[in-house]
Image (tube, rainbow, N blue to C red; front, side, top):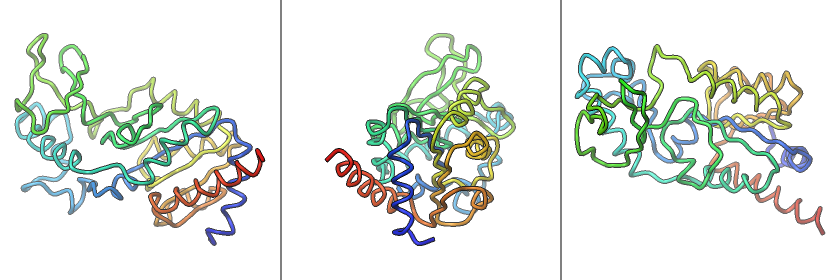
Length: 254
């Protein structure tokens, strides 16, 4: 796809949109230097993410699991939001209704300034009591206690993230599909469009009549079903789109 020739039509769609929804995945975080923590690059000591990111692994050896998450938190803390994160944060002021749904747990969208963020898979900077389900924010790097314990009841705290074998929070998932189905424009940014149920959100939007725009360096299973698909990194493409969108907005007002 010729990026320049398609910028105009995309901007026209966005200028007419009242409701914009986005789904972001690991790709946008990878552009900030955060590894996926899965596959070869996710190997830690002799363990893979699939061996550690489970409740069974946590109960068997909470110290080991927390050492891994402490290491991950250290890596994430050393990285910064990229230009793509920053554009999306600024877009909250640009559209009447704007929602950012992310599969990422790193909190980079919030650090970039995004306020209306729905986190499908949780947040690595939050801990949850395994007895009371109370959620605590903790930004200590490194952690002061491994494994950490609940200040109120003394039970173990676990990372407030969705592990393998666990279901997503039903209310969060319902809200995400509701917003996706009700938007005018849906973006899929930096996601492989493989992990369910998140991968179905853009399809849900398309079925409801929304225009769907994909931004990803590689083709995905979603590519053939979208209105526009840009083979690009979000940190490079979004600033270009933003600049053209704002230029056209000024023209329209003038």
